[in-house]
Amino acid sequence: MTTPPVHSRNEAFSLVEVVLALGILTFGVVPLMGLLSIGLQQKRENIDRTVEAQILSWAQGSIRLRTQGGPANYSGTFDENGIAAAGTEAVFSAEMVPRAAASLPGGSATLKSWKLEIRSSKREEVLLGQYVVWEAQ
Image 1 (cartoon, helix red, strand yellow):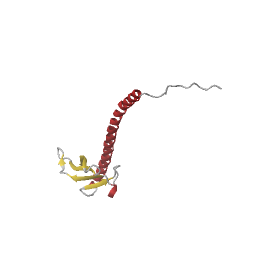
Image 2: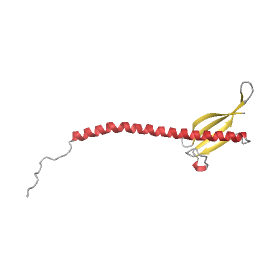
Image 3: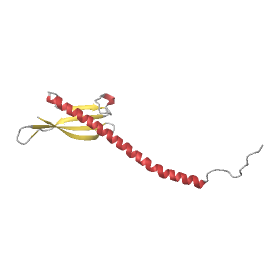
């Protein structure tokens, strides 16, 4: 029976190798962390744009109802997906107020407009968008 030879030298990484490896790792990870925050901000902005589009669609539907005898002013609350909601689920609010009508040249038609304001309750009532919605008569 033979025994394996015993090595007198300990096999491990030296302090210089460990510090060098950590430096290289840090050099690669720090930029990725910066990109992560930018990506999250972009995601938030894209969600807000989608919700704004949904609320604008609601506003256009409300104007169609108005032409059929609905109310002159509109307001609504919406959840984080832009779907009409009430109570504690409401994250966004929208208010649509009529503005003065404008006549087209030639007097053949009149354009009615509404000012639409969209606000977010999550961001301390920050105004997300302010739009003018037109309707031809």
